[in-house]
Length: 254
Image 1 (cartoon, rainbow, N blue to C red):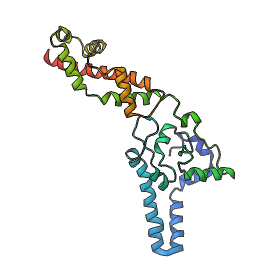
Image 2: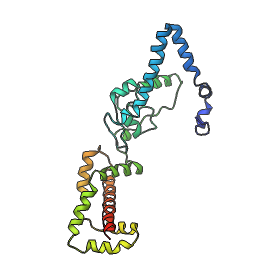
Image 3: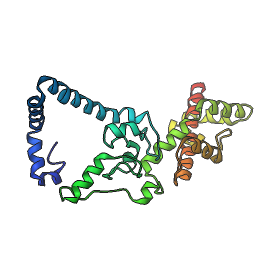
Image 4: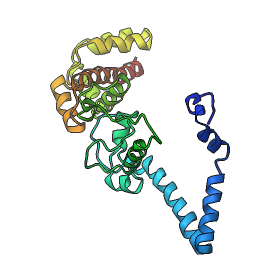
């Protein structure tokens, strides 16, 4: 890694040495394993085990995003996976990690086995490591409001769960015998942004209501104190998406 981006780590001489000689520990371990059991031990005890470690690591950024449970809203597909947590010594609690990344402990609950943390905890008793961080109680219980970036992602997912084409079609059908579409067509000479804003600001019939969006959110997501903000933002996004679709139709027929 670039020392300029991790200056705080350069104060530890052993880490600097390991960074400069990062292949040396692997060669040394391989040599010791070969001395211990010969070629069979080298193949199984070193190469196969190394491949297994690699695949365990790779599985976190693949399987742990499609297989498991989600306790927290993180705006992504991260999952908690008990099996992966066992074979990776704790990394399988991936949704926990995405929820509170500064925690040393990734198994937030007592029953979430996190062997890496247990080892670090024992090392801290001997002064070998320090500053271990654990998540505050409100974080574990999911009581903190989610950030704006995550809120936008979740709201977009909620809005996208409704068919914009179907809603747009129903809106246009309800306007068919009124002057609304003709009025919009007359305004089609304006810029697209102005036309989309005009449509979005109108009272769109058939647009899901706030209570309907809330019911859908409760079906899709975990309980969160930010549900009102998510629903409100999703309503705004959905109105804009429907407006953009109607705009396409109006401009195409203008």
